[in-house]
Length: 268
Image (cartoon, rainbow, N blue to C red; front, side, top):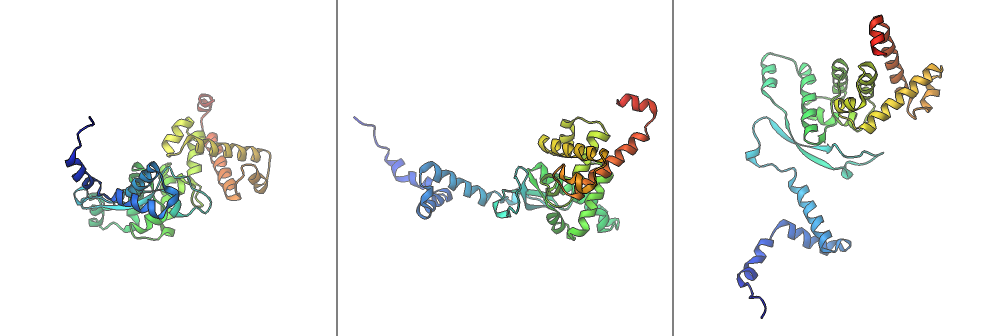
């Protein structure tokens, strides 16, 4: 004899399948024939559901101060003229307003003076959640212009000898070269190992090795008395890149010249 039929499950079981995933599955099967196949349809429906509800946060999960913002995934690989519609987005919770921020306002601190603290904080919060903000994101969130923001971030990185993890530095989007200078300075100026440099600069080892290799080739071209145009062919970069590396090489030589004789012996 066969197994006894479970009539309760037969009658009420379909109620459990009245979900958004099932509706998406049915729609994809009808409107997108190439996706047919149970595994492919299920995966596609679940992925669409994640995209719909990924940026959603319940009221209980939010409090006064943080805002919901979409950033570009840190692991996204940028490409030439790659549109935003082809990039993976990450839902981020950013503390736009903090007790420190309100206290600064009460002390009559100007908005421009608050930016060097506020923007790096937002970038680090986004990076910890697997996303990156662009200068335009940072301009819209605090309410300023991106042209005013760029020199603020560049000065912050230069003065603190660090990198603010954002798209310009981790995805090489834009014309900024500060992250390359910081990486090379940490390696040759501070004598840190490449692994430590990668960790402190929020870069992968592949990117760190590439920048260090470019700097070495520019340094070699300078010793051979090549012009900037000639040297630009060596690292496969621009004249601006070569000028940045040459300025760094000059700065490193000046730092070595200021060392005491016994210090030079220790660094050798």
